[in-house]
Image (cartoon, rainbow, N blue to C red):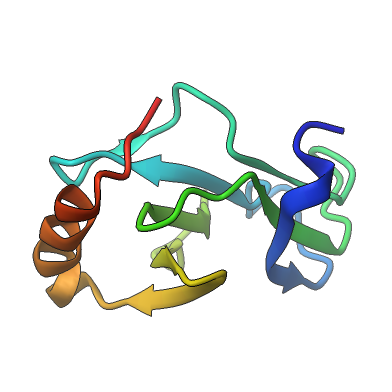
Length: 114
């Protein structure tokens, strides 16, 4: 498994209706604040497209990097999206209103997206 030595569980999800909700996802946030899905940074342990309960995890986190994670609601306005920043071995929540400030911190620390 890619980066198995340094994996962090981001969130544990219960079972869900796969016709309504997509699989949970995680991605890097680039220096402009855009979510970058170009390279895989984690995965979900539940079976793809089946709505199984499981863990969303991040592998090989980068110090100072901001990540976004969430789950798409295909039928309503219940789509979830959260931001976190990896600092000192922990994922620290970042409010949407504080994203610009966190991005400036990320740029100052030299975290790089792939």
